[in-house]
Image (cartoon, rainbow, N blue to C red; front, side):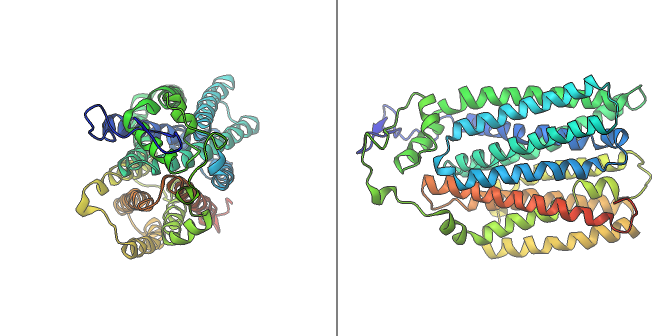
Length: 428
């Protein structure tokens, strides 16, 4: 461990002089995967058991309404955090987010048990309030984690995003298993839902423990955070302190102002405008179809009540797999122009889904859902691992927050557009 000219602690080498920045890398990747899992597992639990909520609240469009409640809180919180990211304690931000996830999913479980799984406007309003809490937690954690990991190595972001995708795949797999196990039993849907909520509660609690005690002490994490601190980042100070590394305050040390200069948020956004638009469009197209359209607009087929479950499971599993494709270097799309072309071509999926739902069979719909999941996860990882290259730690953190804001703006736009599928159906 060494110090810069201001007394800032920076991990540079071990006793033999060899770089330590790769020590504990695989452990850190595993933790990033689990933290990504915790970022979305609670929310995915809620809309993957959409058939349960459609049974309880058949007139209230739960898949669409809960998502519409969730996103404004997520977007608003992320916008505030992105604007003030250089002044925010990232450690406290992420811990508050995971704690709120834990409390919210636990209360969803309590609400279901307290009402004995009954429908009605009261429980539905309670569910909507908790959906807003999930959105607030997401706004705290998603941008905080992506910003924090952006100042480290691309593999950490990829692992975190893969974990986010794994949350959907895990819950979908459990949904299939619980439907098989409980389909013919009394209150089978509710038993499956309670199992989801219990598993999600445990995962969120483990995320709090891992992020608070284990992750900051890994040598590779300390290396990158110390490096970011030496470049002027103040957001990592609390994490370094948790790892036993003290940094100097502005009152104790005069920084080299030229060394500590960073691009403004506006400059970062303008330099990465294509990436920002890419992420917005990727998620706008995806959420205009998934999950509302798949639950309410695909008609009746031979699979019966299994049909939406199969479609959602297909999307989630393929989305997870696609997030690992960029690890193969020759399969990773690095051309910015090529990424834009592929992103724009995804708009063809919207008329494709419409005409398939109207005239096609379930095989075509499953294939289109496969394409939707494949392109969503793959393109998101390509953009988020490419964008931070070449920037200093504070700039990488800021850019990560800005790109997450674009993701959530796309998600919110897609959710609003998803309601257009109901026009002319007499059920708006």
